[in-house]
Length: 273
Image (cartoon, rainbow, N blue to C red; front, top):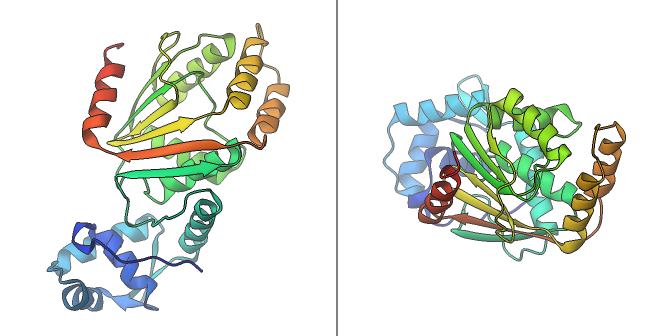
């Protein structure tokens, strides 16, 4: 399946510790989880706190209750396996879903793999435990949504439960169309035509900074696609986006878990609103 090393236990949330324990066991009650936390992890956590955590994890479809015991849901395991395999396939040498280093560097072969990473990362709380605010600073306003409903649901839920601010360097007809849709659908505050090139596409999810470095082949294709559409957005644009999503290249992503850096970017973005 997959291997997860257990390090920095004292820094982990109750939910992460519960997951690690259940990955080594078939099914456990709250009492048994509490005993393992005390004996093996040197964690003094109350029964009530563990019970609250596992109830929330059941609502999030991470765990399933079987009588008085809890197990990891098959659906969550499938998603987790896919996410880890995707990251192993990237050019990143070491990855641990639970360790969450301050700096993570990952590479993807195309836009579709990047999109899968973002969706699965949001679903598995890779970026942050809770979602409350998102900030974007991009060259163009790209459609985050895809054709598959479960993935749409993840993205919609993420945006709906957060305050969203976006700065966009360009101001093409397509950017305006996507801006109108995003404002209506998700109440995103957007400013188009903000002329400043960061050198990467920027996302901030709470206090986690995601920097996406597109190669020239991708930026030129996106520029050409957006610039050539002047009056109406035809259904063919979806086919062109699909073709664009599978261009083989190297997209580098840097994930920074640094509140000071996140706050500085947030401050720069909010100056425009």
